Image (cartoon, rainbow, N blue to C red; front, side, top):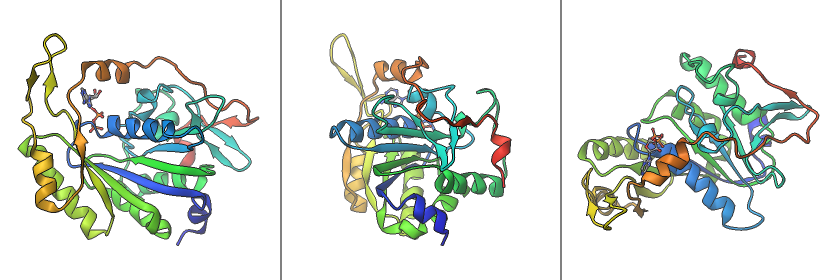
Length: 265
Ligand code: ADP
């Protein structure tokens, strides 16, 4: 057990890990929407989103804080706050630690493991109602590291599964589900994303990637079906907009962290 991780997370009530069998099914988009929904669910809700998709970090852009810096305080790394004054919606990603956003992260397992440990042990998470964790697609080193480091708080962990309706995505989702059962990770339910396209002109629904596969899988595997989200062209525009909508917590007299190379212990 890593005492610093349990201390850091001692005031975090719920940790939700977002998983998908394949890339490109909308896992990061759903992680972001989940974080915003939980944040908006009450005027006092405190939420943070942690991006452990180390080789493809997209959370800073989707949260509108691309290019912001993580600051080092005497008490650890300060997350980037998306809601400037309230500091109720925090964000942490390797994307904040890269010198240039085009820089690629080419790391083997041990280095990824060290980075994930640092995210959990060195960030000043504080009091949170929810910590949403966006993971890479599939079930890889990052997932195993994450679960190993989170073992001390296992009773506060749960997961949400994201799939698209095509057979190929559902087959990979079945592997993901099997992973959650092997590692004893509770599943809150499954979301079927990109389930049909609603024509903005006439309202007609086209099932471009088929539909209903996620719901059928839930019935078969005794999972809760959380719902289906259609293909929404406005969502793409909003998520792709890298407009600076928020500012990091500038109230701290802290040093900005400017290079990911500093953090590998
Ligand atoms: P993943 O994290 O699974 O790799 P992303 O969340 O990065 O997938 O989504 C991949 C692309 O699909 C992004 O450009 C995103 O804006 C888009 N996308 C995700 N969900 C939807 C949706 N429901 N409708 C339209 N576009 C979507």
